[in-house]
Image (cartoon, rainbow, N blue to C red; front, side, top):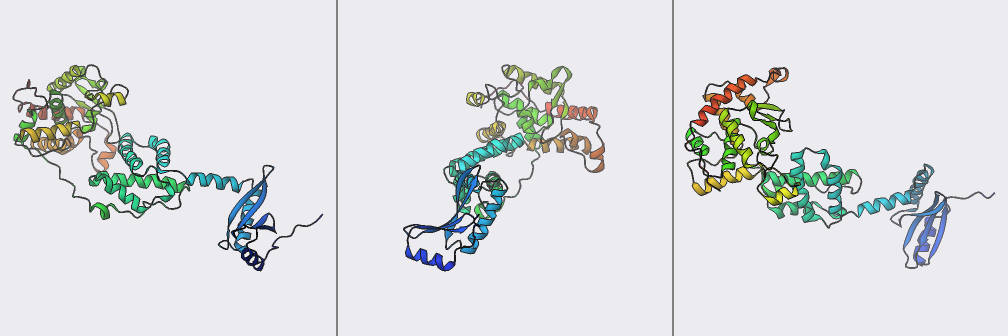
Length: 406
């Protein structure tokens, strides 16, 4: 039986054949073949068998891939074949993945990663995935550069926080692509938001509304639903999202208790409801009899997108506050729903309620060892604190039947 020879070719042969521009194919042994087209283009091809069929794998062009380098690469690929792999098939799959568009990459991220994220994160990431699709969707992922990432941020002219989220989402999407070897380098690496839109603005200090400002807030000229929501936020000190997402099933009016399930922002807790606050919840229930939510959406399109029922958007009360301040110009500094928490805490302290109890009313963890080991919920103590605070607010209400639409 004849013994196959390897390392048959020489550099002198290769240079001569390329110069002659004569179409040919010459074996170097072991399946490695040097080919030249009639136009003088020279390439290396490895021939082997996989699953009983003949396969050809183009390794690269000569002289970019030298004779010595071609022999080393061919040796590596033959080892892969011996291990049961098919290098040509893997190359085709890799090439098809590299042809992905940004839109396809976003859809892959939306399907595989988004369900693992917290609901609030899904909402903020979802907005920015749509922006990425709008701005970069048709582009091949291998063609995206840092300048495209910067251009997308500049295009939407967002505030600092939202622009930063857009940058974070782009980085996450392309990090997944790099991890799957769809691209070699994440194009977002090295992009700094401060270099695009400047340094982050100073964090706004939380506001404590004065007694006179609270009086104006408790009697604000806005729709009844918005006014009741504003009063409940102020009297309970809950996070705005906890009220927006509240379901009627969690408001136990017969027990004067509102249960807030645990979430990303805090552990679950029960809030004692003073009679007047329970009355506000009861009134909201009558105003929204068709919905499972305490504050259902007023936009039919939003309800349709959510299966026929949904709570109000996270911006509804903030927009109602801004509209009231702009239209009626009350003697109140501009504030946000979150400022109502710091307002309640400060006034509770002024009313003689201890720091620890006021912190627990806000569902804040106590500091140090006490916060770790003290599992007592201080329900009765908090009930007393809410009662004192509720009495203070109730005295500020002038006409509780006012209902001015906004």
